[in-house]
Length: 103
Image (tube, rainbow, N blue to C red; front, side, top):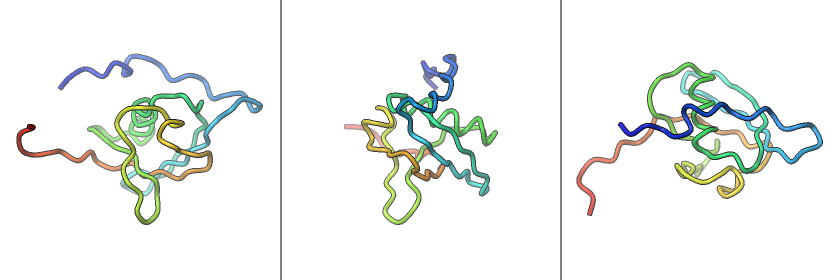
């Protein structure tokens, strides 16, 4: 697998109480839940890696808003560009492995 560029980069500290932030609650596959505030411009890759590390699960994961019709968030971009608002509950889901050739 290709190395993840953000894997070696530590997460920034949680934003100050008066700074713009996005508060998230992430639920893991086993039902465990974790909360943290992030700057709106943090890469989704970093949020996904934080959630997987907080849970302690190995492997590749994706994030999706909880609730009906919650489409998985894109693999790239930021919380802000994905339209993730503060207070959003996210699910940590095993990544979908695409089968077949590209074209």
